Length: 229
Ligand SMILES: C[S@@+](CC[C@H](N)C(=O)[O-])C[C@H]1O[C@@H](n2cnc3c(N)ncnc32)[C@H](O)[C@@H]1O
Image 1 (tube, helix red, strand yellow):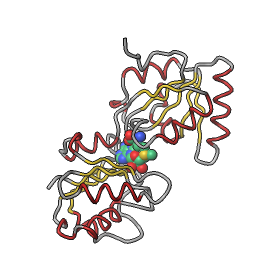
Image 2 (cartoon, protein in one colour):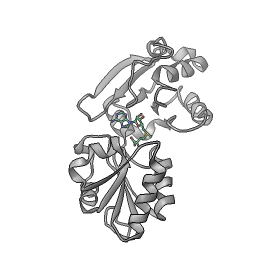
Image 3 (cartoon, helix red, strand yellow):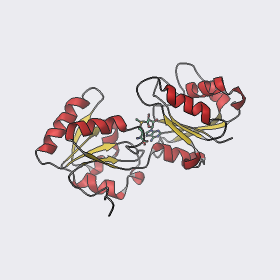
């Protein structure tokens, strides 16, 4: 018998809440949130599921160590603790999952709908045929950029930018530096998917690369999809 993701048990659930809209929070995720004594997560994530949460333990990038330590203590005291992550914790959410694990011992990752899945759907790209990379991590992401350059001639790309440092315009410039022939490849920048401000910008790699070098036209909640050739 397989593991039942959303049952409360010995291990602390890390629930993927989807890309923001309640429509994309799974039924199981909602149930787990409603049974929790305390739910820990970044404020932006908790705000999306506030109506399902009793007691919140909000973290920011600056105080997450202290807040997760407090969460760990409460779990050890017998409270039912749940952590929440945006989208799917298994897509570019590993650092947060590791921090929760360090605070509480074993965790159980409860999958959610990733922003990359919704962006693929919006752009009409088959998820299984695309190269999916996150640049939303520490370091220079050299390996991720290499894989994107290698995949571009034959496959669609789905990329999580690094807010304010490596934005869709920068990614397009990087791709065209090694594949100048790909300027007319169609691309869609998907912002705030499933949220009230959702915006889809349909463009090409050349147009994107022409965009501002410095201040991006896009928000921190963006996914770049490059359509297949
Ligand atoms: C650390 S990653 C986490 C990704 C998340 N685990 C997921 O599966 O969607 C954060 C990035 O996800 C993307 N993202 C998350 N929610 C989004 C949304 N509603 N619309 C567009 N992009 C989103 C943005 O690129 C954001 O900077």
